[in-house]
Length: 272
Length: 288
Image (cartoon, rainbow over all chains, first blue to last red):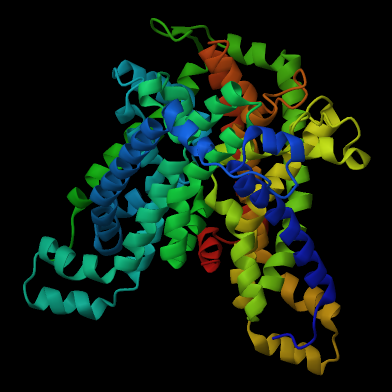
């Protein structure tokens, strides 16, 4: 592509590197400092103290429970998505009735529904169903709003399966059910792992639905816990930042071990 | 034989309809009612609609929302195009740096807001250490600096995402276009404006749509960073809707505001897609 060094872009990217790296440095270093050490040196100083107290403190303040709640919601959302999206995408890609085509249009339309805009009716629906302040009440809308993007991603990857393979299955007299499990699912593993990561991120990082649909300590999720920590421990910056570190830990692990899938899952956010 | 019928699509469709499409219709209905969260909503005709357009805070919030969207566009689009095109090169150091640029994407917006609130704390944060740059250090106390903080944090949060989109799009530009430009004697700058930018058009439209829709609907950073303040000076419309609903318990007026936001977001997206003439999802996938 380009042969000459682009000094202008190089300078810009170096500057942006500082903008990204400084907060990350403060985040990591402050979370391991005592409050006194942090206040004395300020955020930008080199750390002079080392402690794990902030992390212990986070767990003492209920972070363990928030972690478990968030895990429960995340895995349930993944389960719902895995149960609903692959059959739906298969029907969209291979179905011939006018109805399945209409369904695809419906989900494309759904892509444009911002979750913020419907928080009042969702609140009404969930409280009428008696699910207010219940993790199930968070799980259901979170999963529902992950569906359009997941459907787009997965039907895209199922379209890559060549028609000849379907025909071969049909010649063998395979039912749709058999075709689905023997051909479609094995050949769309990449797409399936992308939608798993995408829906997991939506659930793990979700803030809106926990904010409006839960209230008590026992149903609190991590993002809401961080928000509460801030009002409670606003002055204890190291304790607060240790909680932020804990909240990103699982995502960081996925990033380290499955970077490509994570990036694809994140790019799915483009549909949101 | 061998083709999946509608029954394969039915469970997902019902589920999605119940939690996304029914609420979308229902929010329109609720906008004509009064409901405080207890009992049943009561129809009040156009009362909410008259009330919200008489509400000076709402009018102010609409102006602020437009301002934030414009600020997001002019800060994030040029920066992410530059970074994306730069990161599209295959040099090793660029791959390493791109991995660092990526870090903000690993944090939830709640975590990002809490982090920046701590970093910019008037007493314990960075502004106190650098008085020559930040003056009295209370960035949350004035409207102009509070708007600056929100714009900057949005830039920090979302630039990596748009950078990835532009990186993918820039890598997809056929090298032959650059070779042709070089033969014509075009320099780096001229190549950027005459080859790269036109080729990125679809990605630019995608990014603009995402920023507009996001700006019209997101309020988590406002809630955590400024709580709409000082006063109502950073109360954007989606945040005002949240306040109306879950702090003032006026769900009817909140629904009317929600309808305004959905209509605005949809209208702007449709106009942008029509003007640029393309479907949006292909390009978002290009970034992968």
